[in-house]
Amino acid sequence: MNAHASTHIDAALAAYAEHGYVVLPSFLTETETAELRAVTDRIEASAIGVEQDNQIFDFEAGHTPDAPKIQRIKKPNRVDPYYRALAAHPRLIDIVARIIGPNIRLNHSKINMKTARVGAALEWHQDWAFAPHSNMSTCVVSVMIDACHAQNGPVLVVPGSHRGRLLEHHQDGVFVGAVVDDGGELPDYTTAAPLLGPAGSVAIHHPMAVHGSAANRSGAPRRILFLEYAATDAWPLFYHVDWEEYDSRIVAGPPTSLVRAEANAIKLPFPNRSSGSIYKTQSALGSRFFET
Image (cartoon, rainbow, N blue to C red):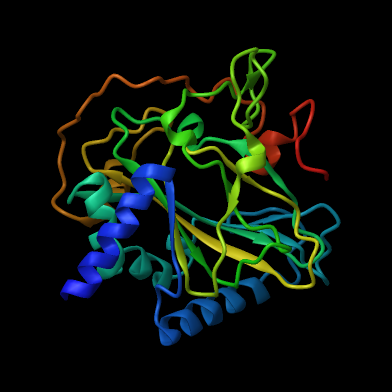
């Protein structure tokens, strides 16, 4: 890494530490971005004829087999090897290692799709509420498959919210996957910053950063590949582990049985009346911030 690139990364990491997020515009090369879009287009086209949610797709309300309205591509690292390879991108892993350490596991992946004039909003939430681990050496990378602009439902992050408390995501004792008013201090949502950039840009946010997104009201799609990373000694507290599959997601460093425990606020995402995505979990929410 040359001195200029090192200085740029140092500045990006300083911004991440201060705000809880950072955007790296045009992080992927034009060739990498074109391949990412082509692979995603091909998988998206395979939804034609699919009637309902399956192992690969979740659909928006109003979906029909002839005119698919895809809400999510689930676990894309299992759907096409390109996504798994991208998750181990050397330049990306170099940055993630500066945040969570050199030994890294791909904890989860997904592609959230916001179809033009259809894509639904996601209410304010913290990823730590969904994915608590034995330590907080985790982060979320967002790879912009399409350009993210102010009108097509970009991710919005409340700056500095990663330094706050774990907010309540349960309503009437049930996990609803969104911040609810528990009488404590809530973030100032008016300060939320949109994560914008051309296709191929990358954003990284902290697991405690409060974020959400409005509906896509533009004529352009908004597709984002989310790569959720954890240190290999961060044990997931919210799902059963198939050890062979678990180790297969290591993208840097050796396998380990070591678990590192830290004193962090943890509230498990249970009971959960939905077995589906965050969109379905949030459907139980009583009141909403974003107009739907």
